[in-house]
Length: 102
Image (cartoon, rainbow, N blue to C red; front, side, top):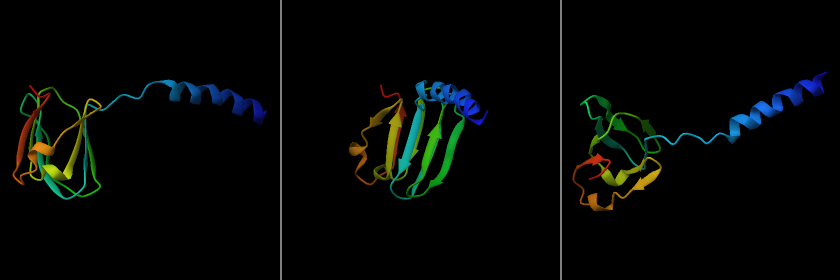
């Protein structure tokens, strides 16, 4: 009986893993402390505050998303599965950007 129960649960596990995982709209990971503010198209604040090194943040909201990032070089941003190039914000100043980018 135990072996048939194990066999019965196996196909369900296969089905769950074969479905493609939904890519988060916005995923941010941090290499150092960073203050940021993220708002959606309606002006609703999705996140405002401090993230620490090794933190991750996943957000969803109506586009365009607007960002104010205090330490842009401390953030890795993935938008719809694509990495966003933050190298143009390496002047040490606050970055202001929108995604999708025009």
